[in-house]
Image (cartoon, rainbow, N blue to C red; front, side, top):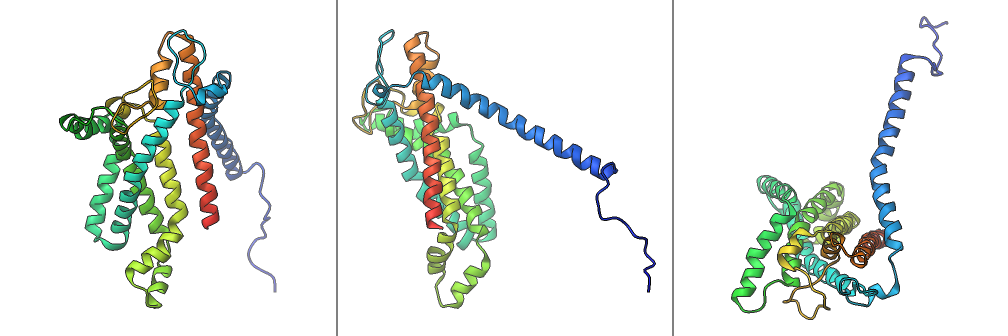
Length: 293
């Protein structure tokens, strides 16, 4: 018995309208992808070229030099950056993860909707506003208590405000991606809601949570405006959490616009170190989450 339907070839016609349209759009998408990478590669290559030419072992262990003085480094800025980002992480990561767990696992839909809306609004607030807020909350309070003024504590608090919405949003999305079957299976075995969240849901979402925290740390590491209002800058090693503290971002800002060649050279080297710190943090986070998975 023969079929009444006409026979059609399954091979794609090279000159058909659909094939031509698909080819054109593929080429356009490829070109757009390349154009999107051009600014990133241009910035990275320029920073690498300028930064490597200014690198030397002394920059990691010495203090910033005076104008027109040869040598010197920015070891205090590296230590100050790690100190303030560490303070910000200690504040924002626990609060952000716990807030995301609450709105995902325990709160009502209306409360979760408002918390997510607040996190989205906070993520769009300019960083300088976070600096002004931290100035009013921390710096002026320290002045009233005669404990100092500009400090690493204030800088860490300002950076934590910028990190918090990123951690909340990424953790919230990571928890929502965990299958409901895992929760139902855990409850079916007799586990409580707390045991289900702590022993089933969180381990499953841990890689995405760590990735979100890494993104938040990367953003905080490169912020300058909040630190100008809170930590300011110092040419000395950090001696206390209640005194002005140097950071790589502020050092780049101050030295890049200076007219002195030695300071401009240190600014390029600090830019490269800052990029490498973010890169190393991301690599470590990916390696840790791979092991956990």
